Length: 278
Image 1: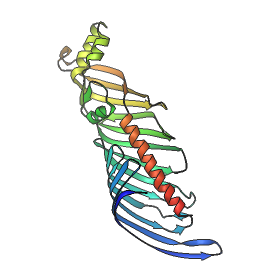
Image 2 (image 1 turned 45 degrees about the vertical axis):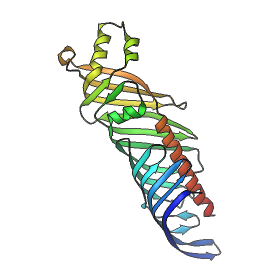
Image 3 (image 1 turned 90 degrees about the horizontal axis):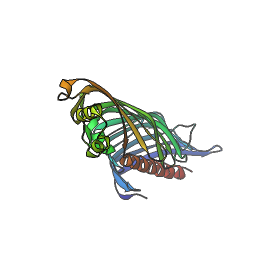
């Protein structure tokens, strides 16, 4: 079921058949495998998998999988996965730790049980030094750009084809700059008074000392974000400090498509492995 597949694979197994059925061990080694499937492509995949049970398939902890690029709409680079096939949960994979680089940051998830037969998955994505400017580009908030780095957590629930994010929390690790220059917003807020005008001017070149971004994504794909920033614009009121809370809406479509295609790819591969083990 894989298109344009290339790479090398080898394996060995010792099997016995007795009154209790099939038993034995196996070792699978895959090197530099590339393929495409279900709108996703994988290149440079390596797998070193030892099975200490064949029926059901089970493994010791710390099995290793890596890939140079996993492209599921947004390319995930330098993918590293440590996992286990638990003997007490046949057909499922326990991801001990997985990490990948994308949109200018490295993301990690830990202790996540993947069941290809289930429509639900709960996990928490750990974010390390996410570039503020790249994030705003991905979310496509009109007129919003910036610099700096964010660290925090994004709780994710996948329910069927829907992705839900509840109470994501990211904090800047140091000072940076935020720029909000939107003609549409300026027109909408025109006439709001002197204080509103000052805020609009301050946000055109806002040097923040602290920045916190919280957000939620509901079942209908509506993203609601909240920026809490403390800082100033050197050219507004002689750099007088502002503390601002800003509510935003964004376009999470690229992120949602990545999560959806990742789920489809993993589900199909694990489902095929489960069928072959019967």
